[in-house]
Image (cartoon, rainbow over all chains, first blue to last red; front, side):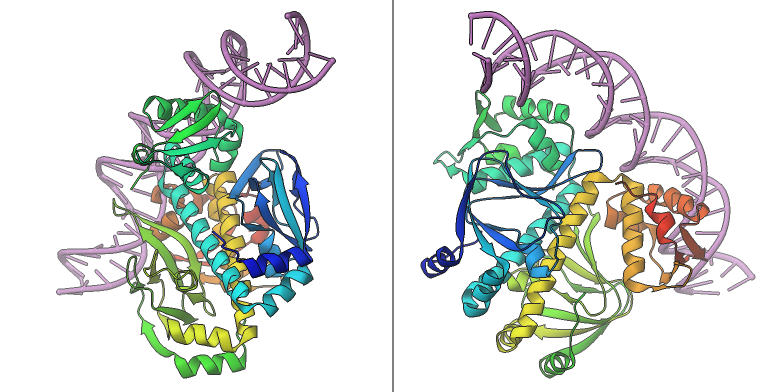
Length: 217
Length: 217
DNA sequence: GAAAGAATGTAATCCAGCCGACAAAATAAA
DNA sequence: TTTATTTTGTCGGCTGGATTACATTCTTTC
């Protein structure tokens, strides 16, 4: 989604410091001070909020090459509104707010890309809202699996996307706003139908055309 | 949400042309060419998409002082993804894409504000997603009424927000993703409970504290 | 290896809220 | 005014999907 170039990467390396987070680690969490942004070098990050009754509600996933923690910094909000958690082993660069803003000021093309990034994310979020209103659960699950596959998989000649997705049903439930048991039976439906292929507990193949038949509209 | 200053307004007046749309008029619609952005001078605008079975799904409302049609232009998408409709009589300035981009390039502070605007909208959209997952219908309705009141009403000394909202239940249903009949009974509940006050078919008062009791978390 | 813990499968129950159907108001048009 | 149109109120029936409750299987840890 965000295409960083050589020059920018070099600039980043100057002002950022790299940190690794093991799977499950919290990167930042709600109501912490928002003084920095993060650039994902590898791994998958979940953006979520914990409700008063302890459930997690996820509003987005971020992939390698993405920035996270941007919205609070760009909106000049002092505290994090959401939390971020490493869903894999994750390597991240931390950039302090001031450094990041300086970078934006000094590199207009970079700044333009950030504008485009925020705009892309807004469209993505609006599409999510639309999908939530339009689609029953199976549709949302299909949409989500499709999006994940397209971002992190390789499309084979047969049209099937090869992936390596290890996500628990619990995680899926909190991303699409459903119950674990419901996800369980839907995934089995998708499997029987050939929409997705498993190897043990890992999803290894996604058939976009079949998956799409579960989606409304 | 977007605070435009004198200088910017003047610049806008130079490059924009004003158009008025009567209530109900379409300003732009899905899959039209996205060659311009709009600045709302007065009135309320609904951003929505029409589904294949004819229903409307609304993803945001925009108020005076807001830009609309921004996301496609900033993301460099050639076609509109959503439609926009005047919910009141609306006065709007049209700015052509090139002119707008030139303006951003020439006025760095304006450009910064646009970044902040997109960032604010992203946070808003993420909060909407969160609310959809967390709240049952009455919560979403309460959240929406509250947001509308805070944006377009005046807060009295008693804490009650005075507004003039003429929205049909049908409109409300499509904004929060529900059925008209459900909205009907909920509004009556809210009315009995003192959360909202009617005058004929217009909502004229909103009691934020009472409304909040309907919201989860 | 065994035991503990985590992740899945399945089934029965229950309820929010959608849908259809229609009556009653309110507004607009004639 | 009368008539047509739009908007609202109300009420059962129906159902998707949450919830509860276990059983099973896979993964770690010891």
